[in-house]
Amino acid sequence: MTQDDDKRLNDLRVDDLRRAFRRLGLRLTSQRVTVWRLFSDSTTGLTLPEACRALQEYAIGQATVYRVVNSLCELGFLLNIHGTNGEHRYLAGHPGHVHHLICRSCGHVREVTDCDLSTLEKLLAAQTGFAVEGHYLEFYGRCPRCGPSPG
Amino acid sequence: MTQDDDKRLNDLRVDDLRRAFRRLGLRLTSQRVTVWRLFSDSTTGLTLPEACRALQEYAIGQATVYRVVNSLCELGFLLNIHGTNGEHRYLAGHPGHVHHLICRSCGHVREVTDCDLSTLEKLLAAQTGFAVEGHYLEFYGRCPRCGPSPG
DNA sequence: TGAGTCATTGAGAAAAATTATCATAAAGGC
DNA sequence: GCCTTTATGATAATTTTTCTCAATGACTCA
Ligand SMILES: [Zn+2]
Ligand SMILES: [Zn+2]
Ligand SMILES: [Zn+2]
Ligand SMILES: [Zn+2]
View 1 (tube, rainbow over the protein chains, first blue to last red):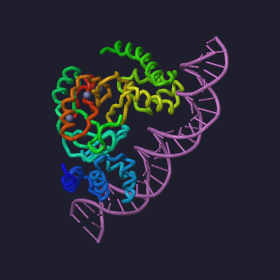
View 2 (view 1 turned 45 degrees about the vertical axis):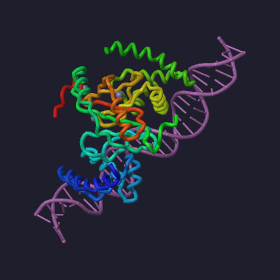
View 3 (view 1 turned 120 degrees about the vertical axis):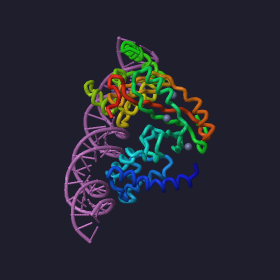
View 4 (view 1 turned 90 degrees about the vertical axis):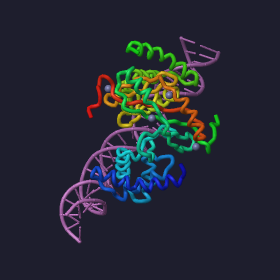
């Protein structure tokens, strides 16, 4: 996927955003759009404090940042990933079943759509008696720009 | 695996603990053993603040709890899992390649050893140019005691 | 076993992150 | 443009995490 594709996609998704908020009787404020834009322009995701600092420029208070990120997560526009040091980063994601491949050096993220764990899930359910509802899967490594690990 | 198995295992692992710390020139203090015992007795894992509160009883300072949990993670004795609300919980784990199946209702965890993502990892490497170094995989659902989701 | 050395600890302070409160601003419906 | 109601931002409060440093105690070596 090229940068242009991403750009177009993010613009389109502001409309999705409006519809998603409307559906819940929530309003689409300029702050919500601005927060969304910040995240959708990032290829590494941001932590909450990072987002707060970045959004000071637009005079958006931190309470709002926390609230909007929460909403965007619940609506499926943002996803949670693990940064190199285990911190939570929030990444603008496409809806549906998606995982991520994260560079441990620079933090760049690629989406992974190629996952079939349904067989394993059924096996686990049979073995353990759990009702398996889903999974969280992340791959990590080093991206082409960063090259192979120096160690 | 039965509770007895777990019990025996945890006792044995205090020796592992001693050896692991020794190997790095670190000392095995009573605090380190106590922290380890707390975690190895838990089937749901604990957050850091939870562990701090529980260990006040033993007069272990919070700075120590943070430090010891960090060390145990680096040594592979504790693993990071996601609680129901996304919070980080630390779980006593067996060494090696292990994942977890977590109950979203009560937090009980079962280990999952049955994972083969190496084929997918190779495919991803070929497709993206990443040097894929590993993955983080969690399953979630509801355990037999909690029954199927009410929704 | 008994110093001596040096990593480790805990109290406390400090910094950082998160949540709560509430008067004001503004979005959406009319 | 009004009105109703949600959303916002300043501020305070709370919680979580990190830092500092004197005192403690684990391990080594004689
Ligand atoms: Zn990279
Ligand atoms: Zn999947
Ligand atoms: Zn359960
Ligand atoms: Zn695996």
